[in-house]
Length: 138
Image (cartoon, rainbow, N blue to C red):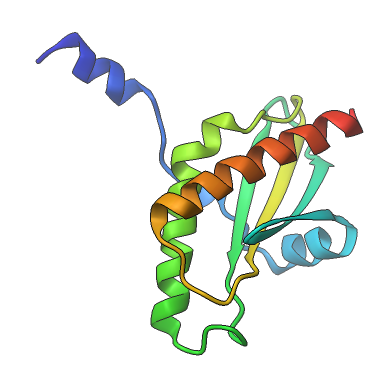
């Protein structure tokens, strides 16, 4: 096998369980104390909190409103597209300082299903805007 193949294996671009917000406590904290901004078609809510360890991490939550998309199939399709776009673009997000955790929520705020390429471009733009917001808080 070529060295290029092994180099590709060493770069982790997955979206594992540790990178998802699953706790109701964390969700409540994010929406109660977090800050938000709108970047079409997403509303981003984020919170930077101390975790007291040497590492930094980012956790993600994707929400699709049932009011706008009645069918679970449609909500799941959009959720999968957003998660995949985030997985491919998450390297553009500047990680928080050591000992910090970034809780991040993408709320889909449009009433039509967008194709993957457009969502990916918009999500990259949203992450860039998030980097600007995080820089202003330092």
